[in-house]
Image (cartoon, rainbow, N blue to C red; front, side):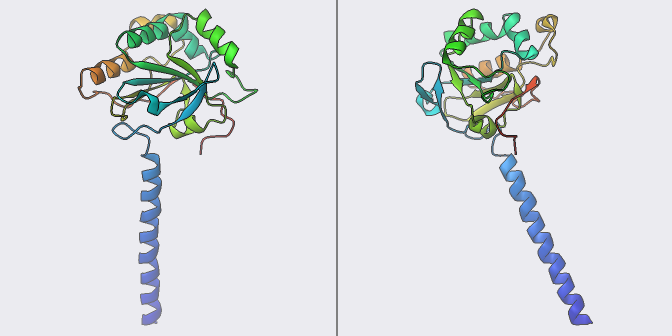
Length: 215
């Protein structure tokens, strides 16, 4: 009986160790994409068919914007001119702005190269490039959940900010006037060589229409 009890205790101890390892491993996986860690590299085609790599912009501050032109929250920021102004301000400061669509073919927000260029022109947008992620691999790598979902990467390739564009999770144009501009604050801090005070926030908007669900 004593031997059996000791075996049982050893089994419980082993299970606890394995369980802790699994939980720790899962936590580590979830923690891979977070401010303070290297931003996942990627290579995507732009609207002209050219391959654009994140590594191409080493030494520059980069903003990533996940978009879906049919999403009311995206329309809010483009309809009110907020997104375009942020893009233009970024370009004036030598910040690279990459707009990314992870909408799968046949899903809301999916566009081809010509449509993307027309969209950029009609919205008077000013990204450095409009990129396509139809299989969603890059979106999943960044744990991008909504449109818009915003990221700031510093000159060293480290993720400095991820989350919402501001603190007003609505599709109401009027809220643009009183919103706290999280993205703008993050870009300014990175350019000034200062820590980003709010480095992570909960993104709001429409769910990204991925080809496969997020794991």
